[in-house]
Image 1: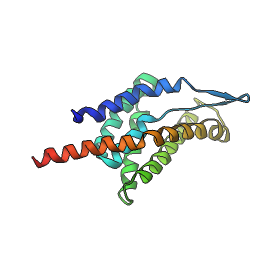
Image 2 (image 1 turned 45 degrees about the vertical axis):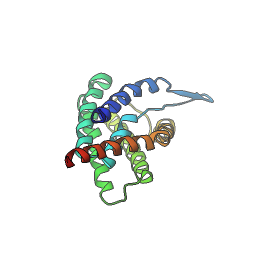
Image 3 (image 1 turned 90 degrees about the vertical axis):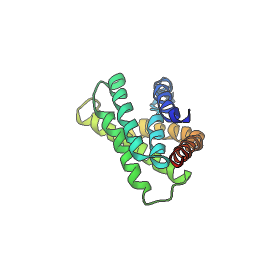
Image 4 (image 1 turned 180 degrees about the horizontal axis):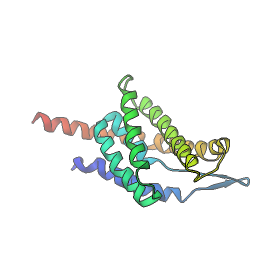
Length: 175
């Protein structure tokens, strides 16, 4: 049963992102702040760190294609970026100790990098024309604060579930 837990969590997070996206933009003193939930990306990075980078990249490709088809209509953008973030996370954690603090920092850094890559892509194709300082203050900073809160609340749960799946897989190999 725990075998299907990782894809099930990824599927739930895939469907939760647009729900939490409904709370955006927030208006504070006449300024708008946009919060973009990146729960699935953060989960995929945790799968990369604690379970299997190859498996995380496969999940990233599948859910990236789903995200492209259902939400943005530019086929291939998320399907490339999700596995790319998993690949980068895999290279980073090869040289550092895999603890929760490192996984959280790597996840937050890659989430910020992911948002910046999207900003650059959409600026390049002239889909948006937001100056970079406005992007940093009105979108990146609020997004990172919100995603940090989510990760602080559920990072340990991600790690527990992924490590439990890893132990089950190792026990099945030993039998």
